[in-house]
Length: 608
Image (tube, rainbow, N blue to C red):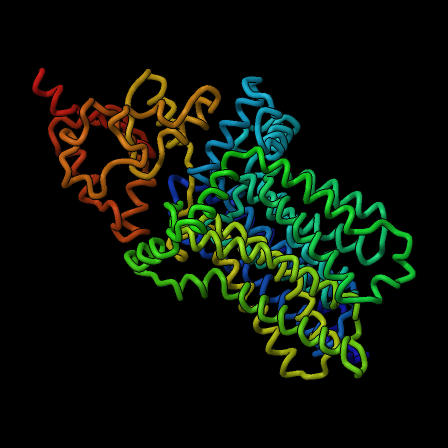
C-alpha cells in the first residue's frame, strides 16, 4: 500500500461531512413526505430526491472504501472505518424508511397474527410459556412498555434492531476466521447485502423465524471465537444465544446445533494442528457443547406438531415415492411468476445472484486453502481459519440435504427457510474469501473486479430490501385506515360471516381483537373456504356463490395489488367494479383504505 495518500485528510473530511449531511437531509425529506395511503412500493412512492440523497453517499463511501482496501490509495484504518460506517448508516436508513415515512405496519400475514399474540400476552390472556417460541413477542412487549409505544411500532423497531445487528455479526464472524481488516470490512458490507432475504419466506419483518435467522450470526460468532481461542466463556455465550434461539424459533436453533456439531467433528478430522494448538489444549471441547445443544434442540422441537407434520411429509415421500401436498411448490410458483410477466431466471438474478457468487467464492477459496495446507508447498497464511471455514461449510451439508428434501415434497416455503441459513454461512465464508484476496493479492485487475462486483451487489440489494413490484411482490403495507375499517367491521357485525380477497379477515382479527380463544374459522361460515373469494369473482355471481349472506371486506391494497402487481392474475379492475354495480350487493361502510360489502345470498333473496 502506498505510504503517500492521494486523498488529503481535509478533502476526506469534507466528503464525509457531505455524506452525512446528505443522509440527514434525505431522512428529513422522507419524514416530511409520509405515506398518505396504501403504497404498493415504497421505492416508487418515496420522493426521488430522497433516493438521490441516500444513494450518492452510499456510492461515494463504498467506492472510496473499496479503493483504499484495493491499495489504489491510502487513507488509513480510521478513515476506512468512518467510510464503512457511512455505508452502514446509509443502508440502515433504507431499511428504516417504512418507519421514517410513517407506515402503520408492514406485513399482512403472519405478522398481524404475531401482533395479536403479543397483545394477548400483554393483556394477560396468554402466558408466554404456553407458546412454543414466545421470545419475539416478549421482546416486542418490552419495547412497547419501555418506549410507551403500541405493538405495531414496537415490532417495527424490533425489525430495525435485528437488521442492524446482522451485518455487525457477519463482519465479526468473518474477522474471527481471518484476522485482517479487509475481511472485517467486506464481511460488514456483505452483511449489508442481506443476502438471505428472498421475499418468499425470509423478510426483514420481525416474524420469529426471521429474527432467529438474522440473529444466527451472533451465535456463530461466539462459536467461532470459542473454537479458535478455546475460551470457555465464549462457549457459554454461544450456548446461551443458541438456547435463546430455541425460544425465537426452534428450527433455527436446530440448524445451528447441527452445524456446530459437524464443524467440531470436521476440525478434529481435517486439522491436526487444531488438536495440538497450545492455546486450545485442556480447554472445553466444542464437541461436548455442540452435542448438548443438538440434543436439547432435538428434544424441544420434538414437541411441535409442525415438526411432526414436516417429518411425516418427508417420510410419506420416502415410502410412497409420491410428493405430498406442500405449501407451495417450486413448479407452481414458477408458473405464477410467468403469468405475471416474470421468470425464474429474472427473480434468481435479482434475489439470489449475490448469494450464488458468494457461494462459489466460498467453495473455491476453501478448496484452494485446503489443497495448500495439505500439499508439500508453503501453507496458506491462515491454515486454522481455512479448516474452520471448511468445517462451517461441511456443517451446512445436512441443511442443504433437508432443503432438497423439502423441494422434493413440494414445500418451497420450508425449503427457502433452510436456504436462508445456508446463505448466512456463505455470506461469512464468501466475505473471508473476497477480503483475503483484496488483502493479499497483487493483481490490480482482480481487486478491481471484486470491488466493482461489491458495488453492483450493494445497489441490487438496496432494491430488494423491501418487497415491491420489482420482485413481483407488493409492499405488504398495512395502513391506519385499513385497520380502522376492520375494527369498525368487527365492532358492528357481531358473529358475522366474512370473506375477503387477499387481505385476510382473520389476520386483521388477530391484530385488532387478539388471537386468544379465536380460530381463523370463527370469521367465516362453514360453506366458505377461508382462502378468499373465487378468482375473477365478477364471473361467479357472488349472491349464488354463498349459501348465507356474507360480509365481503375489500382493502385499498386489494384494489391495487392484483390489477397492478400481479397483472390481473386472480383479480382485475372489472371484479371490483362488479361489486358497485350489482343488485343485492351493498357497500355498508367505507373509508380511504377499506370497504365492507354486504352480499345477500340468493336463498335469502327468495325468502324476501
